Length: 420
Image 1 (cartoon, helix red, strand yellow):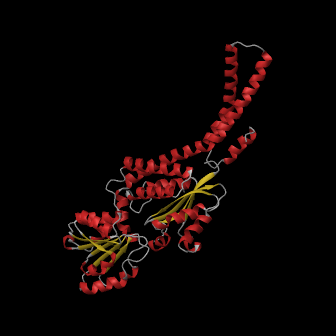
Image 2: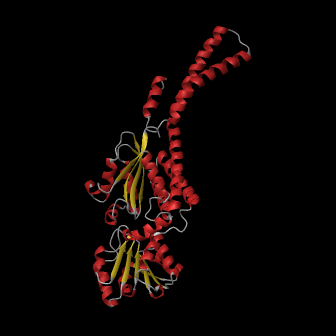
């Protein structure tokens, strides 16, 4: 990794509202294209793209001297956005800061719901997708392997994952403010992914028995419905069942609106003023935001879960502190490993060059001294090796403890000792 660095560019729930995040979100089918464009940037050695409902981040290994501006341009251009539009929302982390951020993300310390377990799978999927597209450099392989291993250790030893609040759980908590008795509620889950499954499981535990599972692919809707004793429907059948639906939780990966204001308004006319609760936890959003203006319609998106999130954070403060301390230890260990790897070529070259010089001078001395006994030969060899080791001790020690960015020291040692 000598001569390169890690750079991370992105935005998240901490820096951008959902209406901005959804504009930068990269659907799964466009990830290969995005990775290809990132790799074409001069100086980019490897790239991984993480895009979830709460963040879009490009993690790159870059040659020293290459800038992050081009990464911003690629992220903006994927959706035809002006880079200036993103300026107030994007963050750029370089070197150690990029490592620290990724470790925190993988361990769910930067999640909307601290301790949630879904993010580690999302990081794994992003890494795997980059591998499938030949986009993972040696440095990124090392980084993601250690970040994922650290995530497992941090979550296990801190207990931060115990009783973790998921986004679907928080959505159901909001629904409790509208409905007292879920056994009388008809539920519609739009999307059969992990979010939809978790939401359905949560609602089922509260006593609801009437569940519709809608998905673009009917087979996947059937699989989810069968698991929870519900009925599967196609997306185009939603308007027919919507008037009888009390709670809608939508979490598809569609780039297009699933529920328009007009569709919901028509359903509300048949409901005769009975309230309807809509929670949209998709990014991009599935439900048209102006649906919230309809009477007796309660629409929430993922950013409206803040109250539940704040309560979750307060109840987990001690475990969070423990997790952060463990994460800091893992980050330090990784950076130390990187430092050692960066100087290995210089150390190897230094040892080889000095040993070759020692052997040349040793041979001259042997010829001058004449015949030596085997003990004398061995003693002379040990003496010269010991002298070389002592001379190299401090240069090598300083190389091993130098900061990753201290290329000047490596260059100086190579120049002083005449290394190529």
